[in-house]
Length: 188
Image (cartoon, rainbow, N blue to C red; front, side):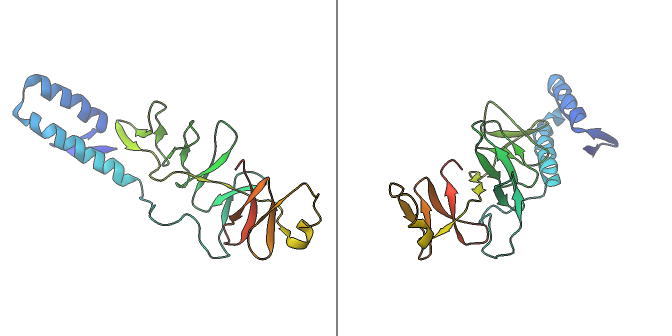
C-alpha cells in the first residue's frame, strides 16, 4: 500500500523508516508520526471489508447453502472450515479465513495468526482474532424416527429431540443449517 506524503509516494515501510529518522533528529514534525501511523492503520483496515458478527451465522431458511468440510461435516455459507489439532472441525466466521493452530481462533483473509497470542497480524498491524468464538461444525448423521429407535438394542437409550426424532445416547440433538432437528456426534 502506498501513501502520498509531501510530494512523494511512500510505502508503509518507508513511513516506518522515516519515522525513526524523525525521532532521532528531534524534528518538530515528529509529533505527527503517531498520527500518521494511526492513519496508516485505518487505511490498511479499510482495505478489508467488514463482516457483521452481531447476527447468527446460520439462517432459518431451508435454502441455506453450506460449506462442506469433508463428506459429513458442514459450516454455514460465508464461513471457513477449520480443523483443530485434535481433528475436530469448527467454523471460522470469516470467508476465506486463516485458521489458527490452537483450534479456537481464526483471522480474516490476508492476516496471519500470531502463535503467541490471539492476535491477527498484517505487516505491523495487530488486530484481535475472531470476535466471537468459532462455532462447531455440524456433522450430518442419520436421524431415526421414534418407531425405529425402539428397535435399537435394549441397552442403548435414546435422547428425545422433538415429537418425532430421537437420537442414540452417543449423539445429541442439534438443529441443522436448514433449521430442522438432527443428531450430532459429541466429538463435533
